[in-house]
Length: 302
Ligand code: 13P
Ligand code: SF4
Image (cartoon, rainbow, N blue to C red; front, side, top):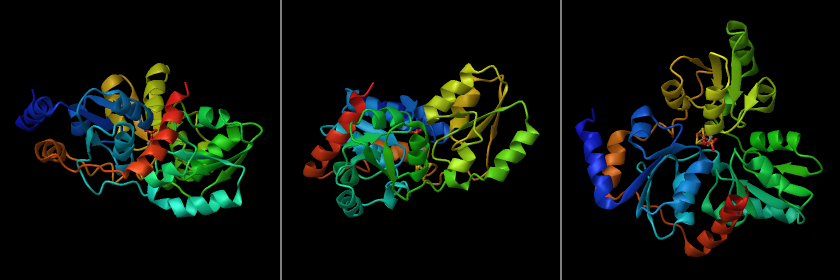
């Protein structure tokens, strides 16, 4: 049964010709109100391909901004204005320009968790689901990888014949996972598989059975025969995991795996976004065109 707020959201969505996109870390009520729930990669694909005039992006700022870069003629709304990603704020365009000047032969691979200005200074974007393919697609021997040093060093451990130059950025949420927590939970559930996001630190990732994006973790957990599964990414993924696999047990690797910014968006905010057409994302056109090239180059990689 839909409650009145959900019904109102449905009505406004029709009236505005809107689509609601929600990241896998959003609260259950928001995920359930969305047309599409996914990881950064699938959401940016949907944003690029949708026919809807309005995109309500339930996630953090860089995700809504990427949608606007890819769909400039659409109205893109971020329901909570200050839902940001601290990692995206760890790199600036001027800082990146200085690094490029120190490594003139390097290509710049920019994790989508970054601002439009930073994307505009980059050769190609990536997400956690395609970072390896993106790096391997480049002819350059040297690659500057920004801003996540953990995803960057994970890719560096997989790729051959390239020098990966890391930026000192990280996710404050995934950084909270400690080696001791992994060891403890392994002892508690010795038959369980541990699935982790590559934003965890390298010494933690060494203890994983599977490493992937949020949607890859959700898919893999459904495919494996194990009944007990330990989740090493933000707790929002538990909603789809439990819905799709009622016969399995999921345990969160660390109590620290909660992203405060991803949890800011409530159903009321989604409603207000559609009602008042707030908060609209704007990107400077010259910046947008350059950032779009980096994003489109990523989307061309199969
Ligand atoms: P995904 O691209 O795996 O959904 O991750 C986004 C993110 O912010 C992870 O912290
Ligand atoms: Fe940013 Fe980490 Fe939150 Fe993802 S989980 S949005 S990387 S702070």
